[in-house]
Image 1 (cartoon, one colour):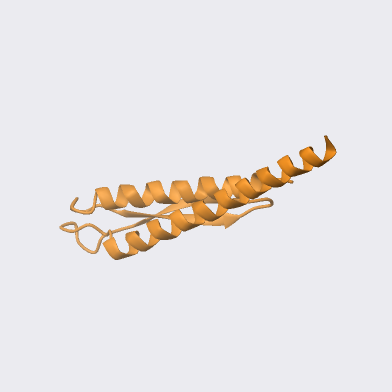
Image 2 (cartoon, one colour):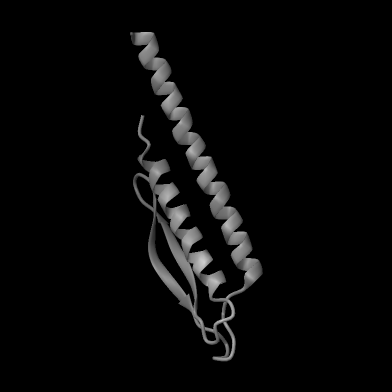
Length: 102
């Protein structure tokens, strides 16, 4: 059993959440450029390969969209929980296997 794909997906979700939180924290900063992570699949797992900056239309406003960031944070939270569940299941299965062999 390999937890690497789930672990790397959890790291990517955590980084996406941190980037989104940074964007929300700077929502009232004039001229703030919103960040958007670029997620890629690798064998095995997932990683954030780049961070794209979204420039505001005007230097008087932030480029951050609160509704978009809310969706991003909910999605990151659900992905993190799903991958944590996979790791817990693998841990339980390995424990059961060791109990059978002992």
